[in-house]
Image 1: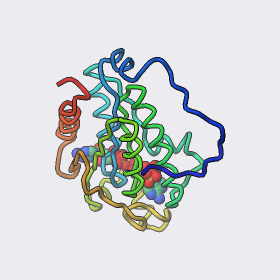
Image 2: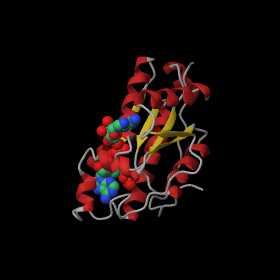
Image 3: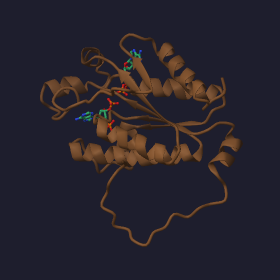
Image 4: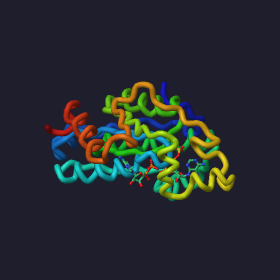
Length: 208
Ligand SMILES: Nc1ncnc2c1ncn2[C@@H]1O[C@H](COP(=O)(O)OS(=O)(=O)O)[C@@H](OP(=O)(O)O)[C@H]1O
Ligand SMILES: Nc1ncnc2c1ncn2[C@@H]1O[C@H](COP(=O)(O)OP(=O)(O)O)[C@@H](O)[C@H]1O
């Protein structure tokens, strides 16, 4: 499994370098990996990723956040929110995450990524590349996310000003077997960060 795309480039071949992933890990003092935060808008994906990034930096671990809003201002500015565009958004950021993880970074990718199939493809390209992948379900009831409404988007969606808003009139397929399951409407941010760090320690990604 993995992403299937119409291949337009022909006569292209993988070029192997002389510095391996293990060499990069030796330079950095830790392995790379992808933490894939998925959940409703307002569930807390970005908030948790920012807090994890700070906690990792305090331990001398290099991480980098990829965030839906940010990426859509740049490399994915040509994509909207149709199912087709969301698939392409996740394909691209999945491939970017894989590159960052291979470079040795702990990638903190925060995307609604509403479709199980897309998230499984991101997982598959990591596993095919022998890279660690953690799906982090930022589980939050729609009621709580809507009550938070940090950007006022639910209000607009309810008023019909935004069409196809996730959780209102567009689907969100919750993970069945995420490596890390957070309950952001029940746990504190500190508890969530602790759960994520412990999972990374247990998997040997960062020292305990
Ligand atoms: N129709 C619709 N549905 C959902 N979200 C919308 C929509 N329109 C704009 N936004 C804003 O875009 C952010 C989600 O972008 P993502 O790249 O994470 O979405 S997706 O993974 O492609 O579904 C999302 O950010 P978060 O609230 O941080 O999740 C919103 O700010
Ligand atoms: N336990 C918690 N974990 C994460 N966010 C929380 C929590 N409790 C309250 N919040 C608030 O919920 C909002 C989540 O917004 P955000 O991180 O932008 O979500 P998302 O990136 O999923 O759209 C923020 O205003 C944050 O302060």
